[in-house]
Image (cartoon, rainbow, N blue to C red; front, side, top):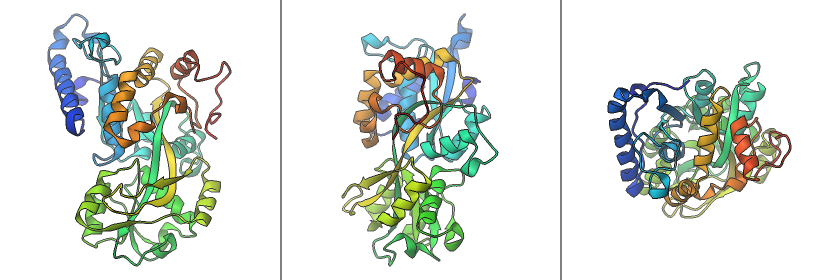
Length: 362
């Protein structure tokens, strides 16, 4: 399942000092790879892809940090000397995709070793229900629950749209095809008594949707992700926007349809001086294929929860602060990879009993 380097080296987009550090490490790894095939142990190098989403999405930022943290290419400085604390001889990269649904398909068919996926979609895919009826992806396994994806519903500040039902007949972006946003947006419309056929639905990447709202080509867009989202923040810097709340009745109906969701709040002033909104969120899971070797998954799980990784996540992105090994099993509705399960048992996070999907999520 692990692929050759020439197909995998892609840039990891981060900002500030982390961007510099990440680029240095990736460039260093790429240089090592050019030389390493001549080494007598070239077969020891492993390559690992993390499916994310569009480059403006939180998945891509977090995926880049994770790839950087678990990578430990040949020649890296030892962890105890301030170097990489990742998996020895591993080179990981964050790969852009359309989002959760695309990641599920690509993990299942072997195009990706791993990916970030909304918890509700992971459970539907594993059990062959919802959008995956009669198309079970029983080879999916979880490494961890990471942080919450929060549903954003964005309109211009001068819009007459005040509540979800006002979207009827309006031009609305529901996210990319095969994205978690499309699934969440469809769910919200259903909870409000609307179907996708009752809005003028279009399917855009986050940055495209923001541009379209700015130029008044659409009236609203949905975007599910860990705030702050660059597409929304960039739009708010150029034109006043408003975030729609999901009313209590609609929230209640959605929570019956999809109990993996939680009531959430987007805080005030996250997006310039925009008022916050009460909405819903769902956990993001890091998934792998069941065929990924146990020693590799164990090393990745250990590297994920190494203090240096957690510190990096806490200091780089607001959603990184949500990373906590005590929440690593929250809302996981599919089996853990056995190697990840072993790690959590050793750490006392998982009781000495058989893991039941969803056991720690409610």
